[in-house]
Amino acid sequence: MSKKDCGNHESYYRHKLYRRIFACLLSLIILILFVILVIWLVLRPAKPKFLLQDTSIYEFNLSANPNFLSSNIQITISSRNPNDRIGIYYDRLDVFLEYQGSQITGVTGLPSGYQGHNDVNVWSPFLSGVAVPITPYLSDSIGQDENAGVLLIYIKISGKLRWKVGTWISGEYHIDVSCPAFFTVANGKDNGGLTPFRFQKMTACNVDV
Image 1 (cartoon, rainbow, N blue to C red):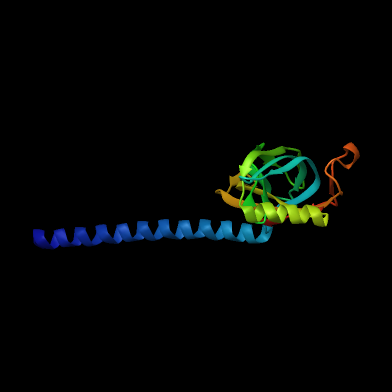
Image 2 (image 1 turned 180 degrees about the horizontal axis):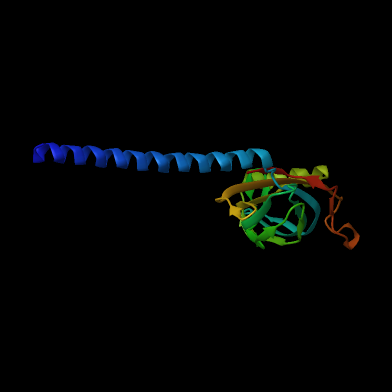
């Protein structure tokens, strides 16, 4: 057999070995992904459930020419992990207020941390905005709502979370939470020295992950 033939055989067997190694690695990766998928489908992670428990408005004042809104509001909001076998890492949670799609307070960060199976976390942050510029349309709308005796604002939470199954921890997922807060507004700003805004009831929040 010539040296040329030997070289061709060696090249053939080398390529055949590489193909087998590649096929084994590919099969291993597919098997690992399949196992993760099966575990994921069996466990079926449920989104955390958020509940707006209370909201107290200490300041909600408009000024005209130009239009500014100053507010100081405390909320009490809870989060429950409904999963029996899956934990949740909250890497970041930022909360703020919206009125008719416009942000009216600065962003307040909630404590990050781990939430175990069926655990409940409760936060009571203050949300404030000092002389936040708003459009004349929003200013008129707030005035109309107060005159009508009702006010609807939204508590918004935006952040990142990860799932934990045993020792396995997923990548980051974005979470958006929206909680409607409905108030009645008493006639007269002073209201006998009492806060004119009255929070009506606890409200379940919409959660997107």
